[in-house]
Image (cartoon, rainbow, N blue to C red; front, side):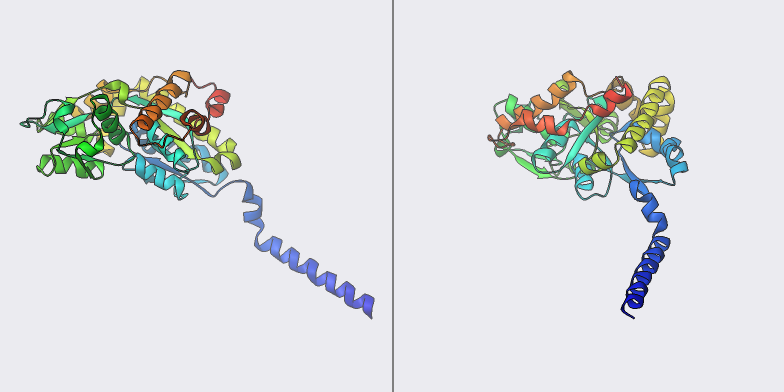
Length: 331
C-alpha cells in the first residue's frame, strides 16, 4: 500500500510537470530571446528616423518572432530615463549625457556613434543685446538638464569665468525652451537642432556662441543587462544601424526628405542640420571619440557638476563598450 501511494505521488508530480511544460512550452522555448525589442527614435538622431522609415529592424527580426517597438526620445535626459526604467533597450543620447548618467548610477553601455554633430549653440533673440557668453550674467537661460545643450552651457560658462550661479537657469524641455525664448520669457536658450535650425532660418534668433568642440557625440546606448543577456541581438541591431548609416551617407537627399517628414520640418531645416552640422562618417567609439567624452566629463568635474571624488576616466571605461563594433568591423 505504501509503495502504491508513493508511485501514485510521483505519478501526479510527473503529470503536473508535464502539464506545466505544455502550458508554458512556448515561453520556455523562447526564454533565450525577448518577444520585443524597444528602440528609441529622436529628431537629433537622423539614423533612427531612417531606420524607422525603412523598417529594416522589423525585417531583421521578423523570422525570430521578435517585434520592434519605437519610442520617441525628446532629449538625452528622456532616453536615459527610458533606459534606466527598462522602457527601451536602445536609447539615443549625447556622449557627455551618457557619462553623467553612468556616474549617477544608470547602468548604460555606450556602444555606437550615430553622428558627430554640432547640434547645440547658445541662442538669443535677434534684437537682444546679448553678444557674448559674459553677457549672460544675471540673465534667464533655458536649458534641458542632463543633455548636451545643458552641458554645452556649463562648459561655455566655465570657459568665460562664470558658473550657473551667475545666472538663472530655467529648466525646460528643448521645444519649450525654444518657445520661451521666442515669447520673451527667457533671455537665451541652450539650443538643439532641429528646433534651433528652424528658429535660425525663421530669423527670429541669433546663435551668439558656437563651439563645435564642446558638442559631444551622438551615442547609441543599451542597457547593461540587455547587452549581457542578448549580445547576439545587440550585434544584429548594430548591423542594421550600420546599414542605415551607410545608406544615409550614400543617399543624403533621401535622408533629408525622411528627416523633414518625420520631424515635421522644412527641407531647408533638414539641409542646415544634416548638410552643415552633422557628420555621419564614423560609427566606432575609437580613442579620439572616447577622449571627447572624457574631456567633457573632466570639464564638468572642474565646473563642480561631477563630484571631485569621481574617477571620470574609470567611469568612461565602464560606460564605453567597443566590443560590438570591433567584432562587426565597424569603423
